[in-house]
Image (cartoon, rainbow, N blue to C red):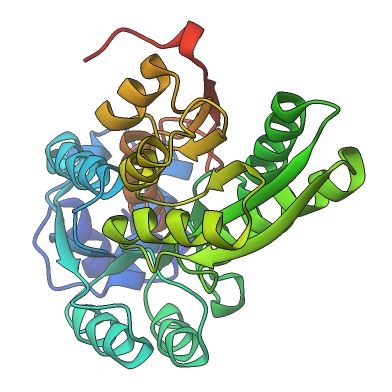
Length: 335
């Protein structure tokens, strides 16, 4: 314990309290003690040291879309998996997506938290509150990054890469004839959505000049609005041949295409392999789905917070999660 005390710059009594799980030690000192003990290869089960509970505040949109449902299940799994490390995952859902409302919920959730995981978009009010919180506790952004906040890490796919893949697929599916293409975004203030849209447009412009992206419209993450947006698009652009939906609402797009009898003449590319997108791929209404693993993202994000406090051993999973491409012919077995 003397060696650990010297290495971590704290008193013998502080080391004794941490290693014997007696509590009453500040977060930062506790973390230093455990890190020093591991480096010195102290011969004891440090991962089982009965230190105080860590509370992780997790903030996302309400689990109404399949992605957020899977993400919630991932955090529930993480809670069970990391219970021995004394961590509590507390989920909070945003009431709405207005900036001041988001900032209020984020600030309130941080009050008793030791770490934070959140999915939020870029706005000065949101960036300001996250930046202030990140100075005191580790913050992990998920799915869409907030790079200028001082956050500890971003966990999720490379959204620019996803947009480029979607562009490559769209251009190849439309062929030499090309045609007009529309993008349906959720909220372009989500950096992830902006990156997908921009990269998609770049590939279309650079690689497939016969294709023209005529519009990007926003569903505001409302799955019910995509049917109306699709109908409106065909009224304005009667020769529309492709739709890239980089957010929610594939079923709404499909309803509109069926009613217009364009379900087999319009290339539709979307994100997240769900029961709905799976059935649309099988039916031939959707042509490709870009999928990520919300389960892996949830677990990895919690691991980052635990790593900050020197608890547990990392799984070694990458912070940047892989992208899977599913077509009608390579669908995995249904769960």
